[in-house]
Image 1 (tube, rainbow, N blue to C red):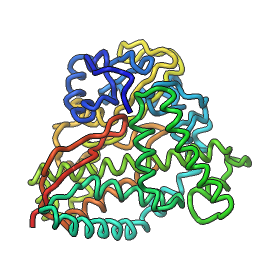
Image 2: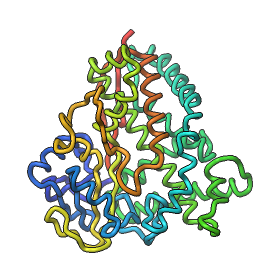
Image 3: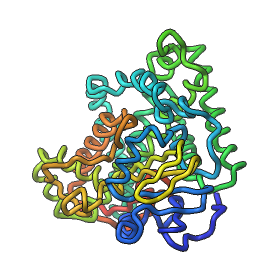
Image 4: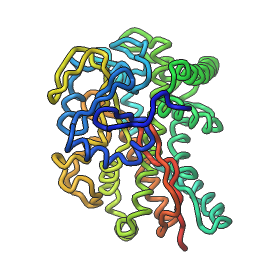
Length: 403
């Protein structure tokens, strides 16, 4: 898709989160803005703000009075769905509706529900790594840690949880590109993308109506908030949330973690030698390479950091920028895999803190553990390409696997 906007002229006054240079150079962009203009503005998308300090991101994330979550992706049109439900509950929901919508899904992502999935995730990773090892032989030891590995893991996990066909993985990747990356396109193109996704989900929902089974889709179809069944829009919106947010965020975190280890041999060797350090290291990798930026719409005029934000202005919440703010973390831009105190916000803040964090942590940890077990010595072997939009992660990570 071709952007309807031209190149960025100044990150402080003309930023665009879907400009390819943004995610590729995000840490440098945020550092520059913190020194010049800690809350940037753009006229693109009919007006949007970009705070880059931990203080301002936190302030907005907790403020449900002045900011609505009815849409969390900055795009070329304001969403049709109204508060408090929004278009993808519970992430798009405001109080008081949000509480019931979130509580409904919490048991499915609680530790006791997620922990039994570890063996299945580990088996999946080992199968993928076996395929990679076999394919790399013919390519002089070259493999793509993102395309051949990271991008497959959450697709398989989420499709299984929703009860969607595993063979539709390529479709899922297309939906993710259209919905998460294709934001700076015409309104007509945007609607076409949602129509394709909506048609697919409708087919899956109808199949579940006719053939109920033990999965999240059937659960949502039977669920109630209070005594009221979920609306059709609520069911579809929640499935969109689980399908899109549960995949791209996690494969981005896995890809970034492997990219770091491919370019920082001391950290890679230390993790191989000290596997007990893995949980601490994963938290640090999540901090520095946090993938998720959420968004809000201003619901009441408010001034933040001296900036007058008006009703229906977009506001991006770059949790990754807050995580590398020197005012919040010592040696903020460095990965310290033994960092003892690490109150990062990779999973967000406030009422919308990621309900899938237990699953994401498990997938990232197991994926990195198994990659290192299979390939303890690997290095970057080509150009890295990055996503565009609000989920930051490498789309290609070519590595050379050393014997």
